[in-house]
Amino acid sequence: MNKIRKIALISIVLLGLFSILFTIFLFYDDSDFILRNYSSIIKYSISDGYELPKRNIDVLSYELKLDISQNEKSIKENAKIKLIAFDKTEKNIELDFYDNFEINYVKIDGKNALYEYENDKIEISRKDFNSDTLTIEIDFYGKPQNLGFGSFWFDEKNGKHLIATLNEPVFASTWFPCNDTPWDKAFTKISITNDSSIVSLSNGKLVYKFTKGKRRTYVWESNYPVATYLVSIYSAEYKNFNQKYITKGDTLSLEYYVLEENLENAKKDFAKHPEYLKTLSELFGDYPFIKEKYGIAEMLWQNGAMESQTITAIGSNFISGMNFYESMIIHELAHHWWGNSVTPKTWNDIWLNEGFATYSEALYYEKTSGFDALKSTMSSFKSKINSESGQILSNPGTNLFSATVYNKGAWVLHMLRKEVGDSLFFVGLKAYYNDFKYKNAEIRDFKKVFEKISNRNLDKFFNQWIFEGSGFLELEIKLSEKVISKNEIELKIDIKQIQTGYENYHFPLDIELEDSSGNIKNMTSYIKGNTTLKYKLKNRLKNAHFDKNNWLLAFIETEIYR
Ligand SMILES: [Zn+2]
Image (cartoon, rainbow, N blue to C red; front, side, top):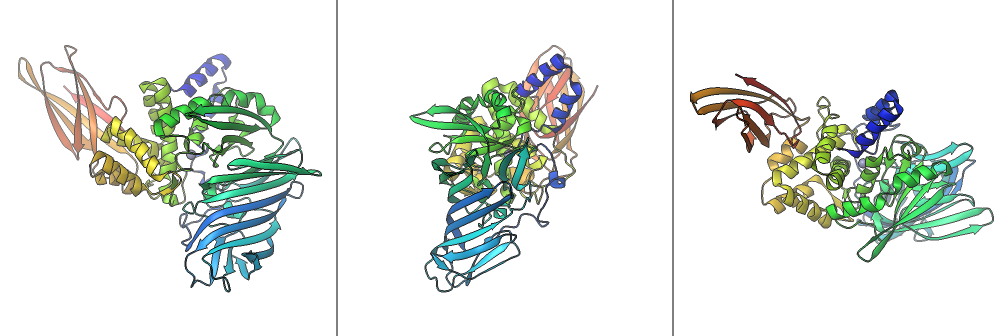
């Protein structure tokens, strides 16, 4: 049984607050974002999908120095971007940068450079700069915009400030100039200055902090590459508590930062992180950022959580003190393998993030609570998938955070596991992780790893579930018997595919037949198209079950004709 459901069930009995819990079930979705199909809440989107810039550059590092004015709701920032500009014949180097800031100066390798700053881009002239490795420095100030899911907030609660960022998918450039694509990962060094009562957080390790008068600066550094959508800062009067996760000679620092009123609840909700880390490491490989940290910071955005690298952000509403949102916490941690370490090349590959993090929840419950927990978690994912959107997993368009991407995404991994078998599936998952950790991958890279591991061509599987088909499988199964002789019954099973999102799926189907004497026959038949299967039974059929163990993203209607 899924633990969250168990806890929720007890709460219904104890509190009788049916309506409140109903709301939790309705909106709670085992994932980063509580609201589905949130194009309604996203404040800005790019109508043609998240078309990424194709630039001849590779950013090596971002060194950002932010000085925050909470009262003015503004920042002063100095950004140093070290990059390789491959094509020396190009006149300009272009970066994404929302054009609402005032720029003090732009330099290349310490010398003033000419630039144009419009249409949310900055183009810097590389005339007179011949090296292919350059450091661009942009010094600016202003009020960052609040785009996408918010991107940069100056929030307040009970008179206290809380500053947070959430860039996904393409809004890092609302607060620093960058090559805002998941493909271009870079090291970061981020320094945040705020009032001396404030704790400021970012990716990686705290390298130093210092206080000067009434101001305090925190400097965080990541020596693992970070995608721009995972770069983040949080700055508030946080209370902090820590844990340690010890593994094979390494000690990982677990650091939690919450507002005072949530401290006791957070201690309860976050306590099991060593167990989550142990389980996920056994499933996928070592935690990727072991030399730095895993952290959680509270934010006031109340639509879910965000897996910013080494510092997940979670909305206050999801700190309950009762572990209500455990699977969300597991999901964000799992992203540190799927998304943060292995990062998608483009937003069309987001299945590699969200499908994988969602399936990780199910794998965690399977590993800690058994096969029934896997089955029930997969059922709860299934109930939220709708076929009407016509969305194709490898081409989600602007709706990156849909039930197709998350829940069908988890189901596709589950079905791949059935397709290649348990042992190959887990070997393949680890091999894929190992081949692409700290890098980028696209869906075809994942496919190639599985084709190699299984020594099979997986075109059909990937086409029907990922590249071409939408929705799920719908089966109409009719059973009829013919008495051949006293001890011989011929059973005919007509299987018809009636879904609309894809014409002809191929899949393994588990069949369980029980005859009138209680004899049970189990088999797996590989179905291609509409099929009639025939079986010989000794007695009349009593019962038939299809896909009893919940391995297929299918809705099955069965009729028995006597
Ligand atoms: Zn997620």
